[in-house]
Image: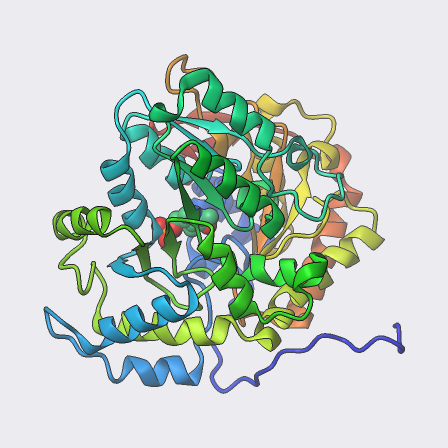
Length: 461
Ligand SMILES: *Cc1c(COP(=O)(O)O)cnc(C)c1O
């Protein structure tokens, strides 16, 4: 124990608890085989520590729960909508707000409005639903993230940055009129929760403006990104997270948002825009897919909880403990020489399955295998982020073979304790010690879209 250094600690205490169920190994063997070795198909009652995702799994505060009680469930013009609108304007800085049931609802609407068949959408690595909505609207997604992002051991503090040369060469190749917008994610999930620097965002904005291309932010984890900017980008060390967030957004024309991440709620999202004409179209369209423009598929109480979540998410004490917990686990794994993506990400620790199980080839699904193995070991649920998530090329039908083959251990906000974290580290270490005995999987059922959610596997004997 380093007594010179103060530990991070949660800026809250616990008032209500949810019991967890422990299972035996025999029960887990049955559960994972019935789930086709896909952790998405496990029943949550069979899971002990659930690190599948940080999406909608957050613990709300007493203030958010109090907000739920003042839900104004009017069909139109709910008070809670105006509260949310005010807070999005205040903290994100965009003019117009359209609530959606979650992030992908916003992605659907904006993709349909801005993309024409044959367009190209460049982005700093893809996100599953974001890319799919872009493709379904007729675009080809082009990854323009810096090469460092594909190297799990590269210590670049801003592995989420856009490679401006790649972006510029795409513009020259296909022409600016074929690029409706640049899709910029803040903390890039698929790269391991890696942030983008403001200095890079400024350059992206400059290049985009020069070519009259819009920039859209995936703001899902933008506040976590703001925290990394504060501690890693010299210019911002004395700025508040709220100030940094506002500046990030100021270089973009709008955002899609999954409130289920940064904003500490269980459901909710939004589309926010500066351009009135696009907003007007989106406001028409939201009625078809989500609901009236003042509720977008959400109950009034959900909008209230999300609005209050913004105030809490920009608190530095909150973010320090949030990211502190993830780093606590990551640093313990590094000490044990277990291969993880570095630097440690904002919302998750990513095990490098290629290095963890080097005897498996990528078509034996090393990350899928490792996630199943970790569940068998201790009932901990993680998620594959590798070849299964990457899917197939929509034109050739070939599997994408991503360089990164990762198992994501994602931390719900304000949910698990440090002792849970210790059990997690011990379980991973246990699997690591017997890694040579671990055999791969074969896919026996493959859905057409977003296959990772429902694909089924069998062990290779
Ligand atoms: C979760 C997520 C989305 C999609 O949001 P949903 O609320 O799950 O529909 C989009 N982008 C990123 C980066 C996400 O993490």
